[in-house]
Structures are given as structure tokens and as C-alpha cells.
Length: 138
Image (cartoon, rainbow, N blue to C red; front, side, top):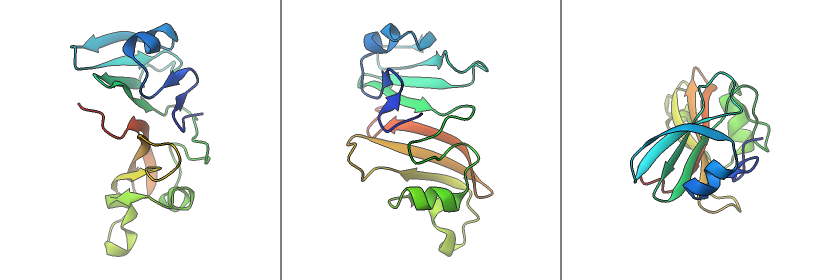
């Protein structure tokens, strides 16, 4: 499950040393301020975890990973809007002529301060889902 603050032992805001100690990341690259690792549980090797001077700042969904509200890659815009009443962004503006394409943020106004979900919609369905720090810094 992805969220509300991490995936398994990997949590948004933990230091790079703490993240590496979980054994869930590998093959990091970057400099002192920003970088990324591959998330080991993703057998396809497509999930990239981000870090900055603030610590771990982003964790993507992959395969059939779901949020606590049941949202995953492939969920519809209507499902995401029902799960996150604070959804904002291009994709959330259906009445303004959007076809459900573009980015949107949800979970910014819940009890988990400092983190939110970033969704990317194409044709009204989630194609990318990332749990991220409110101020990632890079």
C-alpha cells in the first residue's frame, strides 16, 4: 500500500541513510541536494524514488499498488475525486472543459501534514501516481 506517508518501511521525510537502511532502494544517483534510487520491490525497475536535502521526497506507485482509499494506476478521475475531496489541478476541472488529462494533487488537506498524492491523468484515468513531500526542494 502506498501511503499515507510511505510504502512499508520507506517513509517520506526519512534521511537518505534511513532509506538505504530499509533495503528497499538501490543504485542511487545524484548530488548532495537531489537524487534518486530504484525501488527494489518493483521487479520491472521503473519505480524511481526521489530524495533531496529534505530527505526522501517521492515514492511512486507501480504494478497494482493502491492508496489506502483504493486508488491505483488505472483508476478513473471520478474514483479519485470521490476518494480525495481536496483534489485540485487541471484534471479536476471537468466542468471547465478538461477531458481528464493532466496533473492533479490530492490529500493535501488530510491529517498527514507535509505529504500529498500527485496524479497524472490521460483520458480520465490515472497513468502515474506518486506520494510526495509538499516541499520537495528539487
